[in-house]
Amino acid sequence: QKEVEQNSGPLSVPEGAIASLNCTYSDRGSQSFFWYRQYSGKSPELIMFIYSNGDKEDGRFTAQLNKASQYVSLLIRDSQPSDSATYLCAVNSGGSNYKLTFGKGTLLTVNP
Amino acid sequence: EPEVTQTPSHQVTQMGQEVILRCVPISNHLYFYWYRQILGQKVEFLVSFYNNEISEKSEIFDDQFSVERPDGSNFTLKIRSTKLEDSAMYFCASSEVGGPDTQYFGPGTRLTVL
Image 1 (cartoon, each protein chain N blue to C red):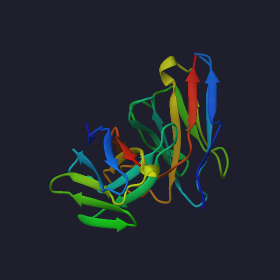
Image 2 (image 1 turned 135 degrees about the horizontal axis):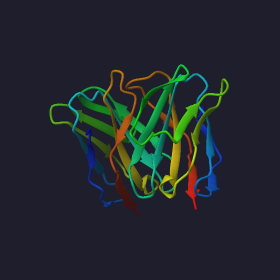
Image 3 (image 1 turned 120 degrees about the vertical axis):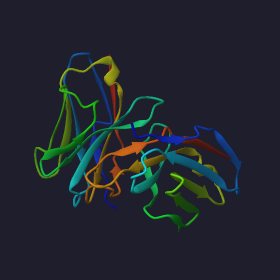
Image 4 (image 1 turned 30 degrees about the horizontal axis):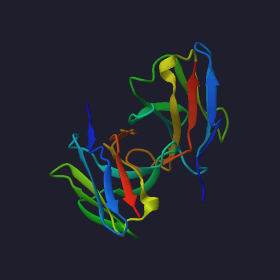
């Protein structure tokens, strides 16, 4: 059974701080990794994707991937109250595998 | 910006009834997916669809479920005889290519089975 694990939180940070969200996965053959943001009652919204080891930056967001450790993280710099949401880590094993396997998500609260 | 759309936003049905959930994927996308999320739980994969056939399905996707692309734009999920435990948010997603490509999600249909 391929698993994706996240700390469910809640993670609480003050406005302007860096929020760090972590995810581990069990399938060593996984090839692509996604962070989605989900507001309560809404659908997952893509934040970032990463395929290669290392860091990938997009505005205030940085995704980090370490395939050897089977670990992927998301850093949110200068956190804003509007960033308050559940952050979902999703993994695709690649090849002919089409499905995303999601973690349960980490609830982030940014306090003004 | 192109987006996935879904109708209805909320569907209430009686146990044992058939429901059809509708999706319009992003127009140049070729791969289509259904996921569901029971309240408070993970997003779970149901099925993927390409070239008018199922590419992959999960163990959740049993004989009561079916998918169809009835025309060039719509993608539907049918649940033949709904059960109480089918109550969930159902999300349609699409991607330009398959495999590890990025999937974009629609707003979801909340299905309530009474």
